[in-house]
Length: 295
Image (tube, rainbow, N blue to C red; front, top):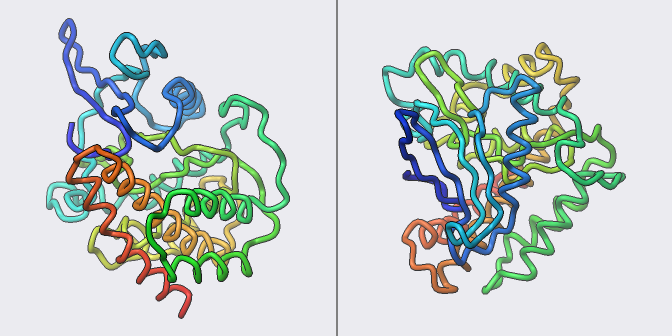
């Protein structure tokens, strides 16, 4: 199936049932566990988050070369530009801000035990995530990035010091949701889930790259205030707009680091045009980060 530079998805039919197999592509540098993702989707379903039903998980790489799991096929659209432009999805665009806010609130209410090992308590989830992505950046960047160096210092000086810790999806955005004419059908791609500040997911949803050319700041759908009000109504807790804006700026740094990771995979021998093109996008994200710091 098209899309998904980090994982492969294969659609197939068995006994009249349409299913999807999700696995790690060979030679990829982004490490995560398919068993953990399988368990997270199960826990999300129990918490009322719309997700595909998962069926089987296999850790033995001898079967298909890498670990994989199988889930139900959910029909719908995942490509962000189509979601934001297809006339048939106009009702979905009207409903999605509240639906996404409700899904986020339910994700953030999930038990932390769904992540597996007991999470370590940290004083500042923001500082911890910034440190984590800085360490990745230092380990993999093949070239200097002065804009990212400035961003790291700027974010460190302004990191929110305290936050409610919750289960965070980590990649909650258009492109990782399945949408039908009525709106949200499923939240997918859970491999970046972790313990953190729930405002991280709201800030990530506002990152410019996930607006796919549309103007409204929340996934190209609406203004921030509408998302925040809907999230609070759904039981997600109070929203501090300044904290979400920090996470939005951090999200651009995070996306730049991920793009560098994809470029490194390409440079390491996986000759995939999508990986190469994502590496080129670092420059776009650096510009957005500089603009946010100026604001």
